[in-house]
Image (cartoon, rainbow, N blue to C red; front, side):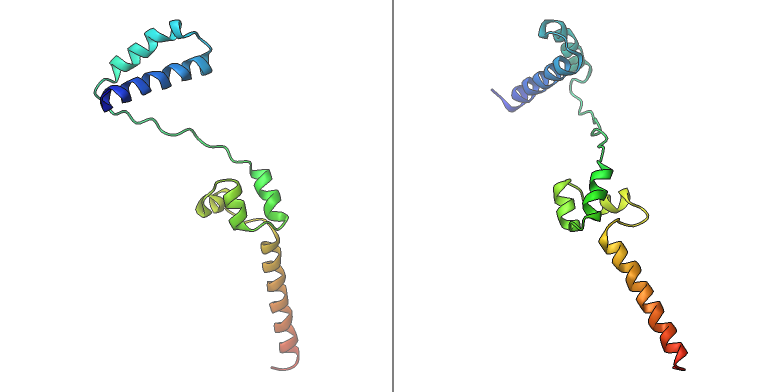
Length: 119
């Protein structure tokens, strides 16, 4: 079978399978729709955007707050670093954020101590 015929056959099967799963109709009922779709887009290369992905924000946040490393969270939830930061625009939750806040307080305390000694 040529590549073109094989690709056409695979596309028919994918459309047919999706219609059976999503709509719950039989192959006999779905076949005319599959043929109509194949004729409608014949010779074209239509673009269908990927489904919008939902992210389990509460689970991601819980892991970060438990101290799981960012690298592990990225791997576990199949995220990019930029997507993770996009999901938490105010900054990543977790021990790192608390440590930074504590570090800021320590620096401020040292400055106050330093200024009270006349330095």
